Image (cartoon, rainbow, N blue to C red; front, top):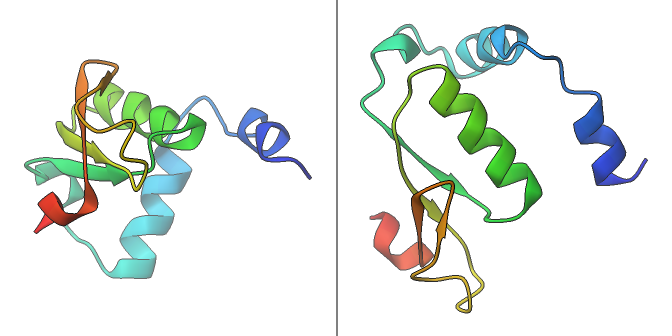
Length: 86
């Protein structure tokens, strides 16, 4: 299945994904998250950014290996090199 087809299958609500993330990584307080950095400035990263923002989770940055994207912004979120994630 092509990635674009997979993305179309995402549910309107992120609740199932949040539940899976909480269980898999034993996270008990994702609702109290202060912010997140998303890796990948392509379609999936943008979708994650929109979803997180809709849940009230602040996206601090989107990190990407493509140096041509560094310094740009997606959905008002700065794109940074991976080295700045530390």
